[in-house]
Each structure stands twice: as C-alpha cells, then as structure tokens.
Image (cartoon, rainbow, N blue to C red; front, side):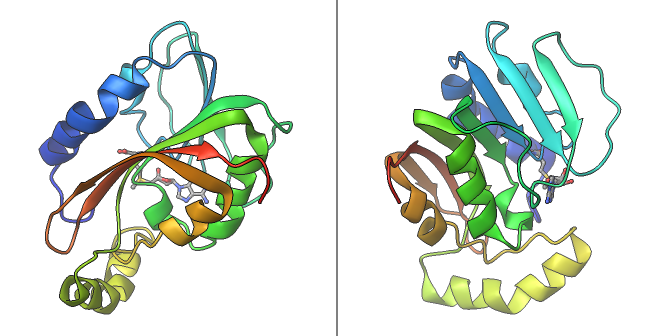
Length: 185
Ligand SMILES: C[S@@+](CC[C@H](N)C(=O)[O-])C[C@H]1O[C@@H](n2cnc3c(N)ncnc32)[C@H](O)[C@@H]1O
C-alpha cells in the first residue's frame, strides 16, 4: 500500500481476494474500508457493516452500512455476531494489533473466519531489516502504515490457518489469508 500503485492493488484483490469474498454470505464486518473500494466484491445477499475511523461520504448499496469508529476501542457488537471479518491493508496501520485481533475473535461466531490481504513483514532477513529501518519513516508519511507488519504471532493466538498465499515482492511482500476462529485461546 505504501509503494504499490492502485493498479497493483486492484490486480492483487482481483487475483486473491475477489473469488473468496464474492461468495460470502451472512454477516460481514469490514475494517478500515477507506473509500469503500472493496464494496463491489460483496454479493447482495450478505449484510456488511464497514468501519473506519475517518469520516467518508460514500453511497453504498442497501446491504452495506458504514460506521465511523476507531476500532482500537471495544467493537460495538455482541459476541458471536459475524460470520466473517474482512480487511485489506488495514493491520499495517494498527499499533495495538493484539487488542484488535482479540476483539475480532470476540465478535466472530463459532467457526467464523478472518479474510485479509495485507502487506507483511518479509521472511528474508535483509528485506526485514530494511523494513524495520524504513518503518518509522513510512509511519510518519503514510498514516501510521508500518512496512514491518508482523501479524502472524497475534493471529496464531486466536485463529488457525485455513489458507495462506504468500506473494513475494522485495520489501513489500503481500499475504492473502483465511483464518478460522479458535474455540479457546
Ligand atoms: C491503508 S487504508 C486501507 C484501505 C482499504 N482497505 C483498501 O484496501 O484500499 C487503512 C484504513 O484504515 C483506517 N484505520 C486506521 N486505523 C484505524 C482504526 N484504529 N480504526 C478504524 N479505522 C482505522 C484508515 O482510516 C484507513 O482508511
């Protein structure tokens, strides 16, 4: 999201995200919807609640409701409410990832799933060191977006992997993931 062009992001979403997300039914929570670029992927039979901390004025389909809210606070939903929680290039901007992932776990139903596309921390030590070095700069310039986006340790605590696609891309590798809610943590 930092260096990537809009075209690249659209390509990644079409390639890795669209097929899964367009088949979802039930209650869906999208976090960090920004300009609502992902709304076109949802089919009309699901109910989507989308949250972003900034105010965005966009027209949405009837089955999509937007809420302005900081997700670092407690999510305003009952336990076990959503079938899926979806986000793209969102956790990279969150400092307290553990708390947000714990809240996602709480609001997901039994067997609920997280579906995401993120740029993540690199597995290559040289690229990872570069990410660590550059992250203070990217956080300052790009609304708290960290290149060193380590999400697995937090996800593994509350979820188990259903599917992972790693997409190598130098200092900005991507990951498409589907994780299942663990029953106990
Ligand atoms: C990089 S943008 C994501 C863009 C979008 N999901 C996409 O794929 O194009 C990150 C979004 O997360 C939102 N965000 C960041 N921290 C947040 C928080 N604590 N609570 C709610 N939204 C947050 C930002 O306002 C921004 O719209």
